[in-house]
Amino acid sequence: MCGIVGYIGNEDARDILLNGLSNLEYRGYDSAGIALVNSEGVHVFKEKGRIDVLRKSVDPAVKSTLGIGHTRWATHGEPSKRNAHPHQSASGRFTIVHNGVIENFSQLKATYVPDVAMKSDTDTEVVVQVIERFVKDGLDVEAALRKTLKLVEGSYAIALLDAENPDMIYVAKNKSPLLIGIGDGFNVVASDATAMIDQTRHYVELLDEEIVELTRDSYTIKDLDGNVRERKPYTVSFDAGDTKKGAYPTYMLKEIDEQPAVIRRLLQKYRGSDGMITVDPAIVKAVADCDRLYIIACGTSYHAGLVGQQLIEKIAGIPTEVHISSEFSYNMPLLSKKPLFFFLSQSGETADSRAVLVKVKKLGYPTLTMTNVEGSTLYREADYKMLLYAGPEIAVASTKAYTAQMAVLAFVAITVAQKKGIKLDFDPVHELSIAAQGMEQMVDDKAQLKKIARDYLSITRNAFYIGRGLDYYVCQEAALKLKEVSYIQAEGFAGGELKHGTIALIEDGTPVLAFATQKNVNNSIRNNVEEVSARGAHTCIISMEGITAQPGDQIVLPKVHKAFTPLVCAIPLQLIAYYAALQNECDVDKPRNLAKSVTVE
Ligand code: M6R
Image: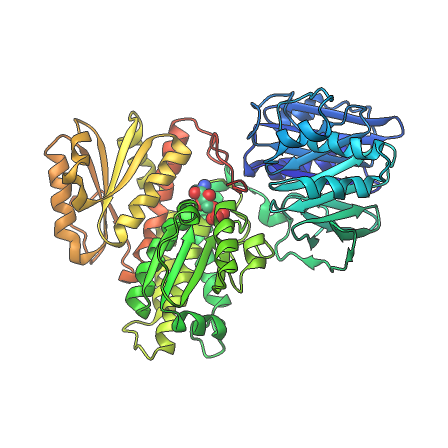
């Protein structure tokens, strides 16, 4: 969703801001803008559409070493130049960019600036108008900002310029993500570290309801009462190279290909000196001691959670439920006596998941976040943390974070089983290495998956995935991936459920792709394939060598342990979606209407 950058230093701010916004493109946006400050005042440039359009519209004659920028994902007001950020106060003195939602914007307008004519349809603009009103009333800028933010209900990440003080950027945060980046003789503002990774690897986290006065060589963090808060920077563990496409045509393809390496990296990161899978003993104890584990997640992370539930129940014997965050938040089930909450989130910023975290923390329950982003909101706010070590995931469609989540959930299941004295009938390190090898084999053999996309998905508007057991969860992810990148309407069904309604949708040529990697249900899923085939479906079976494969199956996956079949299934489901998207000429890395970091509820 919306992204913010800011720069105050001695270099040309224009290119730094535009490149920073390009690095934020992956989050999803529909318009963009920058504001540059120099001795002549504040110069605002904004456009609907891509950063390239904005880049062309910025006057190269405007030289500046200070500015702010924004990518907007519309919530209030249509995507347009008029609604793009930055927004300016009535006199033009103050210029703001904002992420989040100002829920009480109409009350603020009616109460504090009823006579000001708004220049946009956004919820944001009222903030800059109210700040100007309080400054006109006699407050200094910092006090006016704090007073305004105390009145705001909702979420915000803000960068503010004052034309009368061209050596300062004011920054503020509540619920929406925002970081300060520290450089040598310059400082930056960024929604996430990838935006400004070309400038610095040193960042300072901001907590909710904090403001910052940022100059070229200092940052002063304060709470909304003006009390100074000290905080040291941390260094991010990836560098600029990790966020680049390199020779790949798209981030999605790069990230799909990286998955075997991610599993191998995880095996190193979660391995003790004895060579065994090792997880923080406090986490293992918390899981072993709880009477029920609640996994809370959205989208692809939810699908990884479904696989995790099976592993944790079957391997470690811990009762586990998986819930969609946005549903759990407003429709909480009866909880067990001693619950533990697991938050799965690639970005660590998903507002729906955070809403649940805040609620269950208030109820006093222990929480754990499993995320790819160290220092993210969910990471910071949970009692326990586990990292996915997948490296920055830039494509909107989650791929390598999904497989990393399933692997890390398996580590939890394995280590809790060991603590409980449950003897495993397999060597997890060995079997996960074999799974990584199997994933590599699939990654190296893309031609067969490209052919499946061409043969089954080139002229269709809909498709079905069917499976049973773990394959059913794989199918749900396969359908989501296909929908989000190729815009083909797709659903993932439990094979046995088809005859209870869905089979009515099958007609001549309807593509039905079955994952069949589970030995105990191999005959049943094949019967389901026969049922749809008899009604005209164009069927494809993806089975597993030496386990379920039969002559004539369209794709045969390399053999892996039954607990890890979803890891190897991930590659074909992702590549089929990828090639279907290319066939449909879709923007694979930035699908329409979607955002990478979903920071509004
Ligand atoms: O960052 P999160 O894992 O919390 O994000 C959850 C979903 O928004 C995300 O998985 C979404 O479904 C992806 N675009 C799927 O590819």
